[in-house]
Image 1 (cartoon, helix red, strand yellow):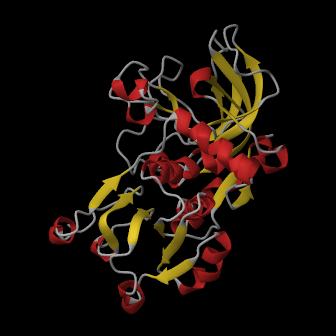
Image 2 (cartoon, one colour):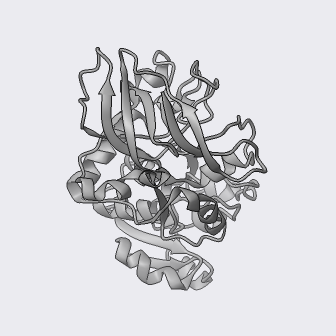
Length: 349
């Protein structure tokens, strides 16, 4: 099944229009006509081979929303016309301890990414959501409960939303908890929205005074400019949990010292260069922890989507055409987006 897409043939080549092949739906497959696909910073890293192992042609995109256009004979959860989403995974081993617990993102045999993952389909690796159609196992398709008018802004929930939701839920963020969100970008703005909706007292950390009003509008109760030593010191030993969404190398000690005894700083951004080594004494003397978290499993992604539909939560987005992706990448490198680009797949023609 031929479908139009945008991708790159090499790391030093710009994204361009191409035609790719999708398999016909098998017995347990769902075929989706893609309406919108979010643009994640990892798309840029992968397509330009800044992360090891990129396979070409590379068609990025793992924040996919659209309508079901066909289902396999054994599919019962989805029907033609349903609004659905696909996130960062399209398969996993389904039998390891992590998969058995619904934590497919930690599959001990390696999950299959929505793009650049191994597959029997041509060309031998998965091709992502910068395309008009995709065929996915029903186990990795998600129901979307938002209205169609919100569909474009739902797309980033499939990565940015679940990447922040999973640690917030795992560390039991809710009423009575003081929670910090470091960075007010594509991930951080969702972290603020979700922590606020979960009932926590939310403090947003930013390096820019100009983001103060935006952070309050997103739901932050307080905003701290992290370059202000006095403002940071005023919050020492007071946080139950801090979610650090920044993908650039930075000093973690500035935030670990803000944690209460038994507090946790959780990292979801992968920096190009390692963070400076933390002050171990600051951890030992307060039994504090530094942890990491990776996207989320299918069950918790569905939980997040249902919660967001109930609360009316979507990402803040800027819509672009497919032929504007390269320009959007250039702007992402300058942090010139509030807060997530989304491709209108209809623009592929």
